[in-house]
Image 1: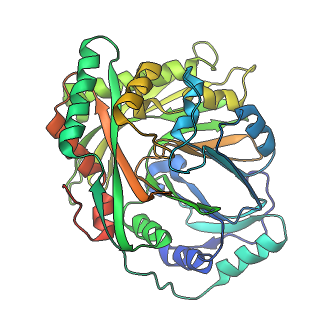
Image 2: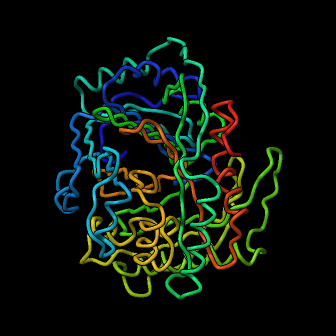
Length: 426
């Protein structure tokens, strides 16, 4: 797998085995966890657990080509803050806020690879200290004793102010500045008892997604329960695919049949605008006429919500690299708006603070020149101000502020469930 040597035979696993492995590694200073979900097909097939051998982070935005050269031919996790994408869109370069790194890169020679479709795991890589540590974790039989999770989310921007920002966005739309912008607000996690790995395990049980993730590096922590794939890329055939999510409605716990969001003119318009934007982004670096929409506004279900999801693919032109591809699509159009550059300017003016890793990306880069890249929605970040979670939605001409505010709470319903605590303001 990924050109790496298997150090063990594949072994069947379930949720209990996964939690025992995480429990055994809980005290590591640095830890990387990526979790998938078989329900999301190939984009959610693989996950891994690794203790990085080398990690580097940048506060001042680095040149992407320099970062790319550091990981070439290695297994790596690349983290990009939202702010890092501003320079890609002809805006002044900025650092991430609240002490967060702007970019980080972790390299590792050994990892526990999980196949969530086959329900097996295997230790891959090179023999050494990391391999011994991970092998011990795989063999651990100690039952996890996760602490009780308690917490509430307090909106740092109240409903009235968020509604005002939505109306200002609609005024920009009427003026012809933009067609859509994704306006978000930050929620602070108030807690006296919190363990991010415990929360990750509970999220994996309750709402498995393609891009479950936990990162602990040099005191920085991040936990993501994201279902959105910004990009996959296979260097063998140069195929790039993006899976934008746009359009949301509430889903009851026992609701099995998807709601057809395309019947709602507002939700459909919101979605199609972003599909066109992603087609344009891929078209910057893909071969002429290779960009195609293979799935348009399919409906996927997650805890508390139905989402519209499309699939757009193209073939990367020979003169371009994986780094060029990331420059073309980052940050994802679904969390900026259209046109992207102007929407990002308006976002900066209205939100009044940086987003950091929320709506940034985690990218798994392999020695075989493949990329699997998420959009960091449904993501908790710990920085200089403690733990917080941001949430928002696409605003178009027919958006109703009250409904948009309600949607923000629908999107974080999973955290209400796993924290077993009412969300302030819901």
